Image 1 (spheres, rainbow over the protein chains, first blue to last red):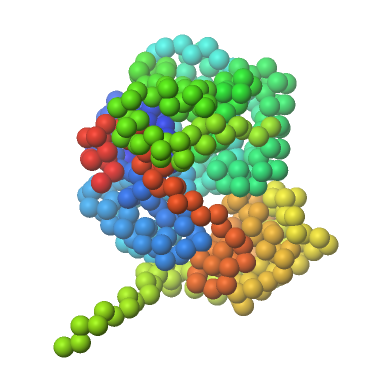
Image 2 (image 1 turned 60 degrees about the vertical axis):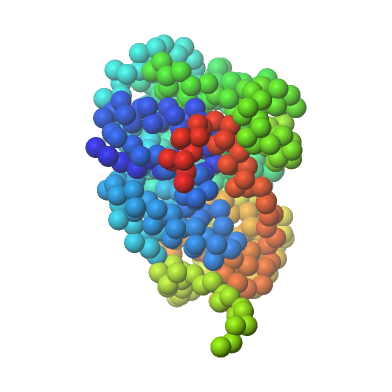
Length: 276
Length: 150
């Protein structure tokens, strides 16, 4: 079945997650046409400029229409929300939307035998209050993780405010409180790792691993590991390298970006610490 | 023939979205009773630095004031600013207003997003999209970039 896999924008920090999702979709029998990046922005980042948001959204709906598939599977919760809350109200999408984790959950019996490798780990799932009303991700993610041989999911009822850490990070006191609460609960539960559901949370929290607090994974990274997919989490490696991140990237790739741009626009994010 | 360049017309929101947002604004103004349940259950109210002595009802009324007139008090702006769409307000609302959308619409207005006065500053990041493209260049092949992103 042909589908459009709309991965979003900011997940491009995590090429391993995008590649793993595409592999999983193929192994589940889909023929995904990946689409994402700034030219496929949903417009949700531009609430302070509705004209720009409108332009982005209408262009993206048009481009997704042109892909010609009946189903668009979204990775990003913001894109998925924006589609439901704005695209379907103001434009003419010629496709139905499904959230990636929802698809995995629906196909979990097909997924189960693909999870062949042990991942011995007691994990604490990082969950937010929001988005769960649209897709019950806070229940689906632990269920999917529990299918991985060796994984033990900590039972915990903590839910952070918002629907992902990117927005929470704009309120530093709230972000710090979330991290402290999460760390305390992880200690009590003797968890080995923190598992995020979204790339935005992964970006904000992976610093905890670089800071030596705990291992941090996105749930797709653990699914990929159990399936034996070979993708390396380079974003984490660069966060761990901190000020030396450029040394961890081969010269040819760095040249494409430009060292000046890297130093000005990329490095500050890589050396930023997770507040705690 | 007059070849004097004409100023570009100011871009407008697509009718669908504009009509939808206006309809929602009107619906919220007509439905909300300012009972304040949305503010009471909001997990972000402790982070409203401007709250002062404002009650939950005051904050809800302040949001409506913004939707109605385009401006409001500092306490309500503080709540609007702190909202990060937790969504706890949606089931708490006895009138089915959808306060999450109400606050989002309020934030769009308060940040100048709808063309009016800006009351909440927005940090502009000129590298936002170039940074995303840079990460793509670091992690995707040229063929993937061409086929997936263009």
